[in-house]
Image (cartoon, rainbow, N blue to C red; front, top):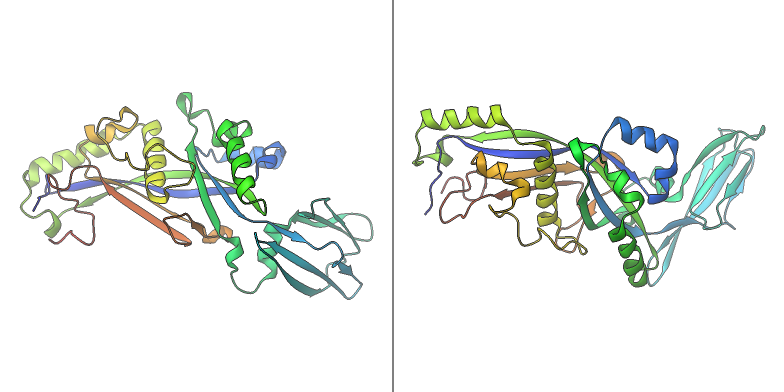
Length: 314
């Protein structure tokens, strides 16, 4: 059975702190541009879910109430769900896009009182979560550029892989629509000592010096972004990704070799999507609002993964 190398072993963890759910066309909006400039996002996910539209014949607006029917499009069927609300907002007329996936509602003076994409309005109408809102993670990528000046939104405006996904996926699932999640991740370190590192090859004093080195030198931001991308791909194993699905981690990857220079034990991520009303899943991961992935950076026959809850006390 392998042992820990240090009496204090260290992990680099990347936590999703800001996220923005958009579609490619939204990058043309000034509001979206300003938000993404204020909160730079370097990681992005290309996702899909069933299209949600409004039945144009179902919309009814009176002085007392308004009602509409949402249509949830699946490959073999369309589910409908009707809602009726008290009209205490002064709604008088509406404008529905030709594809029935965006609505604007006006008051007496012609002022827009409410507008939005039907897929984003639907969650505000339901009383409990609907699985139609789950997002299937199809592809994960990053954008960093020189000194972090390139953002995920810059890359996605004209992204050949994204266009290929549109073409291929819509041929397979024409009833779905593509959504993009732009992520901002913040790093933090976790240290482990005590029973999980008992019998380590290197004692406490030198291990503490190693911890100080980790905290002092830190990992360059571009490598933090790359290792976040790699961990996420390894975890979700998205349909359209190729790199990192089976090759992470490897100590010869120069794009995240600083983790090995600091001799870290493992790397991890955590993210949540409850705050924007969806769950993530893939072919290998079940739908959930919270996701955590942790991977040892070394061969387990040679060095113990002390952060693995199943084996930490072995």
